[in-house]
Amino acid sequence: MAKWVHRDGTWHHRDSQLGSKRLGVRCLLTVGCAVSTLTPRPPLPPAGDGELRLGVGGLACGRWGVALGLGRPGLREMGSCAWVWAAWPAGDGELRLGLGVGVDGPACGIFPFIFLAPLSKRISKSLCYPNRRTDVFLVIPPKSSIKSMTKSKIAVVEAESEKFPFVYRFPLKFGGRVVKDVTVFRAMITLEDQAKKKSAHGIGEMTMGTAWAWPTSALSPEMALKTITVLAERITAAATTLVADQHPLHLASQLKPIAKKLAEELATAMKLSEPIPDLAIALALSPLDIALHDAYGRLHGKNSFDCFGPEFVGTDLSHWLGEEFIGKPFSDILSDKPSPTLHLYHLVGSLDPLSNDDLNRKIGDGLPETLEEWIRSQQLSHLKVKLTGKDLDADVGRVYEIDRIAARTFPTKQFSYSLDFNEACESEDYVIDFLERLERLSRDATTKLHYIEQPMTRDLRSRKEVTMHRVSRLKPVVIDESLTDLDMLRFAKQQGYSGIAVKACKGISDSVLLSAAAKQWGMKIYVQDLTCVGGSFMASAALASRLRGVTAVEGNGRQYCPAGNKDWESLYRPMFRILGGVVPTELLQGPGLGFAWPRNIISKKYSEFCQPPA
Image 1 (cartoon, rainbow, N blue to C red):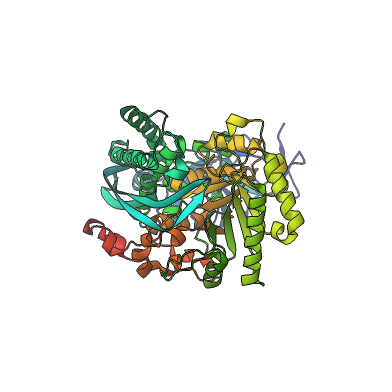
Image 2 (cartoon, rainbow, N blue to C red):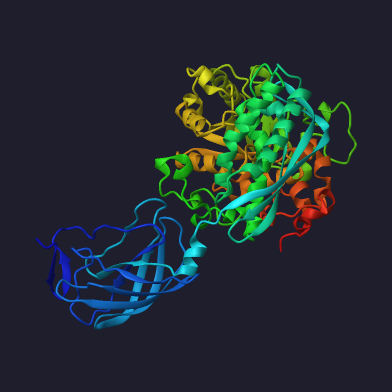
């Protein structure tokens, strides 16, 4: 029985449904739905009532296109149609709206069009309205457009690396470990578009914080650092062996097993008593991963974070995160432009003097030397506090005193604190007891607690009986050292953790993907750093400025290792000499990761990096 009847001058569906769904086809075809509003002749039933209207024609580059078609508009007559349309580009699963002028058999008029971009590797759906005649058509691009739409593959044709040591102006203590210096590892690559035969350079650097990534007792800190820098060199050198692919995300997927294998080979060659952990491997891989995204953006003359659309990546999040993310675009997690400013999270290490009463010896380098001076000189409002996780009285007293000094320095400022236990707590009870005691001592200080970071050991599966469900009902609890892959993120959520700490030292690729998963699962996202200086901090700030929902970024390199920022201040002084307690991330809108490099720290080969964004 026919589903459509004609009465009162229009067609009506027999059921109470308002419309029906129709399937389209993906490949080098654009699927759309054209709705005719001007119908001088009696309207025909919507296409799909046993028939399909197909069209073939050309699709021009940009927003404009022309389509010509032949079809079967009715049950008893043949007809032809032609139209010209305009539509704004859209990502996977997004609507394209346009307006066209056309002739359809004896009817003519203005035809509004609605396009539903097909989902990557999936069947797409078109829209239908029962009270309008609806044409479903396929537009086949001309040969020139097909060539431009074919996935262009990129390959690393050259890769090199170098490293630079810096000494801290003041030691940083966290998790029972004291750090006095750092080595910055820099990866530099040349990325080539194999189809267009053009290339671009990319640079990525990261502080090799092995005390955080590999806190082992089996190796001395010097040997752990040497191991990771050698691994980073080998990973960078292996970049030229990667199979050409479409996007840095695809190349990063190739790099992970290569990095794992290189780590195993290095551990065997050095006769290490324990394997190199995944977090340390991610740290060694991060400079190259950052360089890949930087080069890809420069290759296309765009900001790297503007190159995550389907026309660049070629698929949606499901390719990396599973079926739950079918149809989920990267725009769900990445914003169209950087946040103008982000609050700066200032670190309060376990050895940091809070006021002049705690200051035993002045450094005398012109920078603030106590927390009180830092707050006053840079108008800080966000503080990250390192705690012992073992001495309850000391931890409660430390936070209480920090809040007292902050309120005394700026009585009218709204402060926000994050607490980092660096895996030192034995149980959830310690955190509960801490919150209860701080509440009794100062309810005002408790209300300022923004989130709690990594209270338990990084290997969450080693103590499955310990969860964070009770704590997360009081304050957000996030993982940092535990965040190594999607499976661990999923397990942490099951254990009651409510957020993640994203760091550029784990790579741009994983940071974006795991943030997308966390957002989908209703978890909070925070961006921290690894005492990043110079280009590593700039990359961290660029990442933070594009992640949706992120309002602050940690930046403690300026406190402990200002020597690593000295060459950068001539270009980006506001990024390192903070004013108003915020980082001006609106400066990071150039090609690549959005920033230029100081001329005196890179070779002439990379001179194009020295041009500040317009």
